[in-house]
Length: 139
Image (cartoon, rainbow, N blue to C red; front, side):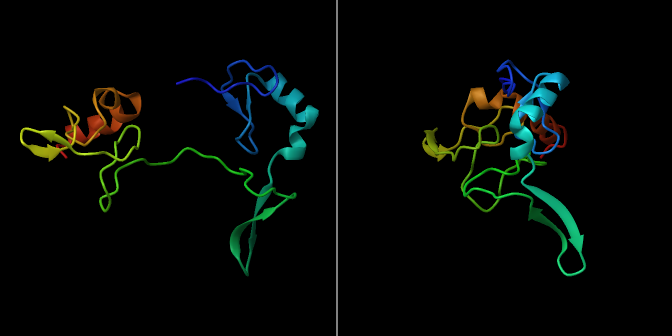
């Protein structure tokens, strides 16, 4: 997986803005520089508040453009839905059944037996942890 690029120097970066988590920096000094160069005007389009009327909620702290991304997070859990067509556990693509031994079926992971696109998705890093859990628990 390729690292995102620093907002300031366009080199690989592994630190995100603590406010919006949408902009990356390679160092604290570049984060400070990016903040001074205008990121603070674009950062954190909302804040979290609590009122007795609405409970916990977010309010805008600046004008938000239509289609503008204001929040981006990695999912806490990734997994298959049981009420839809099979999707690859690695890349998420909808799977198409293929003819195997005179019947239609899906390619399946050789360890956990869940449907996948193929060997590349079976060996993908994103599938390794769940595959081990499902295999260990004989799911």
